[in-house]
Image (cartoon, rainbow, N blue to C red):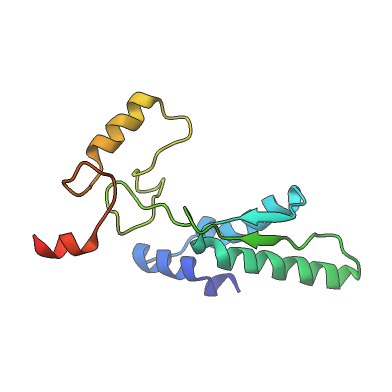
Length: 136
């Protein structure tokens, strides 16, 4: 099942090899959810498949032990902020591994510097218009 996860396939294709950390990430995410006995989990669109796997794991586990030991959480994808785009490439998701993110513990000065280096349109606003890319 893990080999068929969309994000695993995409990242494996990019790296030309898979590794255990990449393959096991959805299971670790599920373990975090089960640990806190979550009723509702708010995720980005790209995490939807991981939540579906979490539900499958809980159902199989509960069926095996014939009682509800793991709570099957509901999940919600917010209308706003479901996918935060990167600072270097606004066509891709913000990513710690790409070093184009704003950290929760970044100082205001660091955040300001990151925004100064971010790829934006020339109108003094932080947004991305893919049509402008074609006009250059």
